[in-house]
Image (cartoon, rainbow, N blue to C red):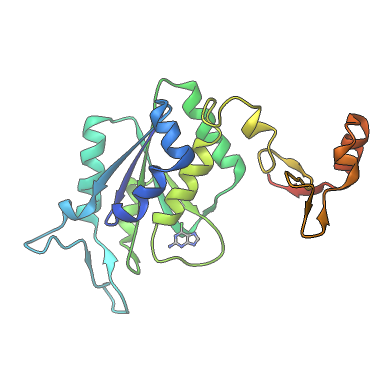
Length: 224
Ligand code: 6GU
């Protein structure tokens, strides 16, 4: 069982994905659990403020320390053994290897619990890093917040947990699963769609020739 507690101001932006398809199935099977903490509840003053202007001047608002620490501490009070992930464009680039490590780690223990702190606005007070275990970037572009990165990390971890993808060999032999991947063109019915025909060899029933055809037409996609 792997658990994610997502600290965000925008639960409604994240939740539908986790209630759909494979993430939902993982929940139903008891293999994954998703929980939310509304950062606003830990906001300061009558307006439940969570951000403020930067010392030294400059544009934009920064996430303040107090609400963030209070939110994380509220989760850790119930489960001290959690790690905090911060999605940030200046983090370590997220890779399949990291997804595997998070998924594998969860298999070694009765429960793994990760807090994902979704920043918003133009940034965060640097002192927030003192309570963070992993800084992760999803790529070389800038997003408005940590919600999409949180979903991408969760999806790429949860699909690797045994039992999530169901009966077939699934995650491990599928394309984009491990190291040097083989991805060959695939077809299903109909045999002829608007003049575009399925290669003859795939209809032949000759497994040796099919294997050779697939090898020849596979693109190698390196995912370390
Ligand atoms: Cl993790 N956050 C934001 N805001 N932008 C990003 C990112 C994360 N990864 C790539 N761009």
